[in-house]
Length: 388
Image (tube, rainbow, N blue to C red):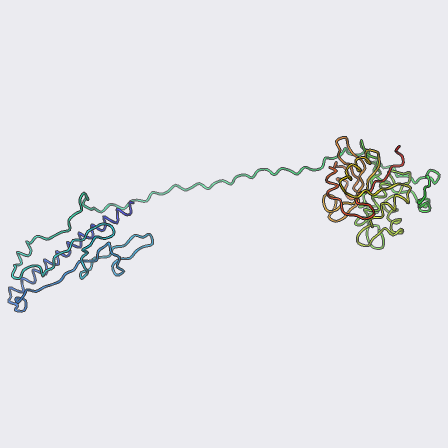
């Protein structure tokens, strides 16, 4: 609105200046013309010398020779030029142009004094409009600097709930002794020749917890055998989870002491090793039978959770083949060794002592179990020392 009022005042001032300039030119011309007549110019005396003076362009009309428009839409008024047409119609801003009489309207023979003293028409002012005066340029007010908003502190991430750790077991340094042949009860299908040939095994860590089998725990990455070869080219540390898990089961449920290196040799000789993959799934049932234990594959369906709980509460162990998740990126055998009063599962993970000391939801285990043949991915291994 302020800009619009300013443009209107500017146009009014320009109109008055143009009219004043035209009148001055007219007076000057009349004086010269009158002087010429006094000197007796015949050509001029015939009908009076006529000069046509036209007004400068209307400031309200856009003409490229006289006005230019800046980027903000404001017009820059140039100096009025003699020879332009006096505005005679209302412009877009409502300012009315008043025609200025030309010198031809003055009768011939009028003296210079009469011309000089003749009243001059000026544009009538619009009603209720003040005399335009040039207003001083408004000093722009410096806007206060907008404060830079401080970044909002992101909320602290909620830590992922880690599996609850089971009570720290008391490790034992006593070596697991090889049983005497007379202490082992022979059953159909047992590999007595191999059992009788066993030397004293290397010691394992004893894990004891309420609701769990007293477990002889081995790590496949143990420096005592981790770099030993399982099969023809694979190390126990990388591919020996099958024989290591079965060494845990046999050592915990029978009187037969056997370590991962001894079990890896036996498994390879019996054809359970598979190059660059570990062990074939039948290693569980085959090893259980060869060392006098009963086994049952229970698969992984809606009835599996109740079967696992019942077996663990009865003192049995369960071998599980796990897929991608908390325990492995591919395939990995672990042993379920017990269940707590709150229903959490205790495991023996031969590749991780941390996993072994944690308590697990049964649903996590069934969700991450990998498909397996020969009755898997869960196999119940019966404890011969419990009363059925």
